[in-house]
Length: 70
Image: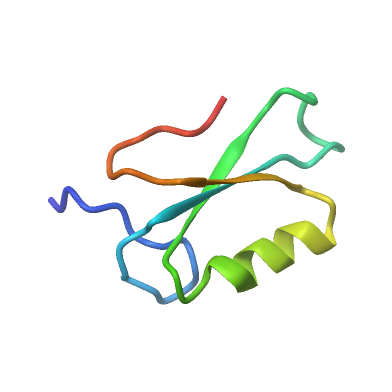
């Protein structure tokens, strides 16, 4: 089992360096946060996807093993 968290982008196995914190207001309470992990190559595209839907709440540094969900 690997101790490195990988990017959430489909097909990517690069180490994650950022956590994109988001929620869907139709499904989640305002304080709820889910996280997609992103490598440098996919941070922009994943962030744009979430942002265009109004879901992106924050973009924070990720350290392996950290749980960003609330």
